[in-house]
Length: 113
Length: 113
Image 1 (cartoon, helix red, strand yellow):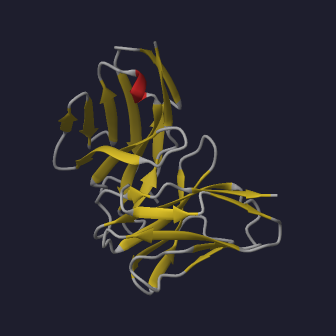
Image 2: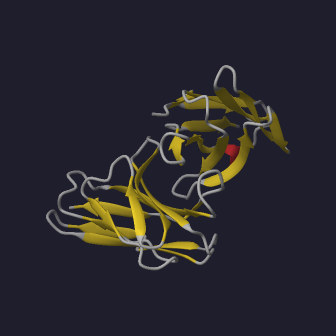
């Protein structure tokens, strides 16, 4: 079945710098790749997603890039701010898991003042 | 707050007892999901339902049961057969199936005493 690996597990960056989180997947037929943000004690919320017919999508300081050939996609956060501190999860729509999302293990992003 | 609610927020259970977690949504979504989240880990799918009166096992269904008698409601029962039930439980819903945003409830934190 689909396997999703997310790296790094923890990322600490200086406020104002950029952060990049990467996920790799195994099923080349996968076609939907969302990113969720979960603040401490809160529910996960979708921040950006991308479908396989595009290579990049941007929303203000957040962008996602997709490399279908290499089977990886990345979340890019520019000009990081304290409110970006959270756990970020990638997910992949699994074609062979009855179209359910397969989740990465999460990345804890720490923004240092 | 997103149209999907869970209750209670905190739940304590003695070993050997069954307990039911509530999940209700007013988003008119067809699909609903139950996830389990353990500290420092991603989301693991317990059960999902894509239509009323039908549901499917996820990756960790053992020791859990669900029902989907109404479109708006998808309660989860944690049975005494679940060996390690202490965790944070998240319910989610989505329009259609597969590649659409999942909206999460606020979660229920279950502790077995």
